[in-house]
Amino acid sequence: MDCFVFEAGGKCLGIEARYVYRVADKADLTPVPLLPPCHAGILYHRGELFDVIDLARLLKKGEAGTSGRHPRVILLRWDQRKLGLIPDRIIGVTWLDNETDRETAFTREGLPIHIWTPEAIWHRLSELPYGH
Image 1 (tube, rainbow, N blue to C red):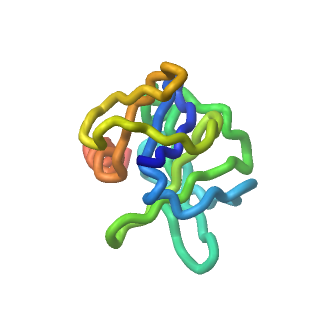
Image 2 (cartoon, rainbow, N blue to C red; image 1 turned 90 degrees about the horizontal axis):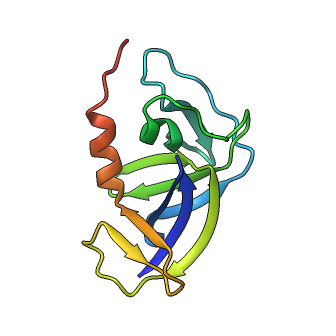
């Protein structure tokens, strides 16, 4: 499978490239009140709204990433859902020979990549407290 690889919260993460709609540079996010700290805001991009999540904050539970004021955002689309992810660094696309149901895969160079699916990210977000 083609895997889009990036770093966040000190981890190397990957998501199947077929879920990546595009990467938005210098995104202008609009904050939304009463959402968990990892929710960076919403992004209106080419006629579509994306909830944007700071992955470092999601993984480290509150510790901000290195995204800055206008971050680079990985835009995901699957089924009827849309989500933006703020990584610390984008590594690129690589081919992984591993099965897609495994949680960790390795590149040919031996780099371990924790594989996430959009559904797994969505599930993790649904477990967070809202309205505080």
